Length: 418
Ligand code: EPU
Image (cartoon, rainbow, N blue to C red; front, side, top):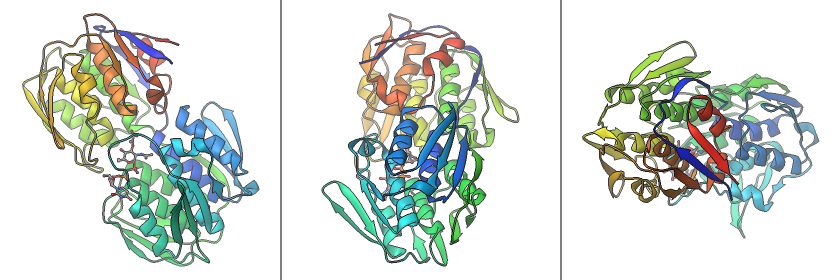
């Protein structure tokens, strides 16, 4: 079992390059299964979730070859089964996209119930509502989701909650359906747009991605093509906050600054200087930060996937901050671990109140999920009193490529012990 050891208190200085977006990549790979030909997908992050999905696609019969660490060629023409029921499929959240893709391709799908980080309930009723509206029958038997349709026919679907997963999954299932599907109250996250752009590049007809109404005119077939995944908004935000928590001076490169607006503006409220370039953000942070309040919301609101990292940053800001989690029922499980480092945080329901403290100290903590792990890494970068020893690193490896290497280049003292 790996552990990260961080000797904090080092000011981060320099530049860091952001990889492709995890949550776009894990949807684009299943989307490539709709293509009856070869897709070449560039700028994929080299992370565990992507490797697991690659394996799942191979088990389905796709020929998936890494051209280099970040470029995957997927030949979907060799697909021979609609069943993705291996145990490891259930370990990744994004395996639910295999349902939309296989249903779209074969009108039939059997996929193990998705796993992923635990934030209380993670229902998929809106995905199922969408598939059923398109004409599928969906059942759950022995931990396997089974979907079947004689044919899929486009229709109007209103999502009762703004869901990234349901929006993308319905888009996947509707791409090869007969007629036009309209998704009302769609999620607007950059990765929703990225998946639509990928599908359109392969021959789909999807309009409106990035707004709350998406129209998908079904096409008969998708051909191959080449596509490059967008940069990871959450990885970028994590490094922006890593710079800030050390009073650092860091260029975060290879990003789309517009995707970072809510984060940049909140960090500016904390007294941090944010300078935007075409494809970078330069973060310069003072030693003392100011408290602020955040509420996580679907895009373009403040992303829930940066809420734990922001909590760590606010824990050393002067004054009292309030964090309201507006997306997930239970995304504060990590707070108990963060408090071990000296953070002063109380949680009531979906609200956390953070009383700024002057210092954090190193101790042994465990990552409870992916972004919780990132939050503890930030605490480790700041802590001055002994090393921060973080266990359950496998959660962090699900979503951050070369974390130690990138932080070391910026001047952090971080090593992994196996
Ligand atoms: N929801 C329902 N019914 C559904 C689907 C969602 O009630 O059928 C609710 C959820 O319970 C939640 C809200 O809707 O309260 C939003 O869920 P959403 O479907 O948008 O989340 P997701 O697709 O399961 C993705 C990301 C998460 C990220 C959320 C919100 C992937 C693989 N995961 O999850 O990312 O937190 O969107 O932006 O794209 C992470 O990267 O650390 C991560 C957890």
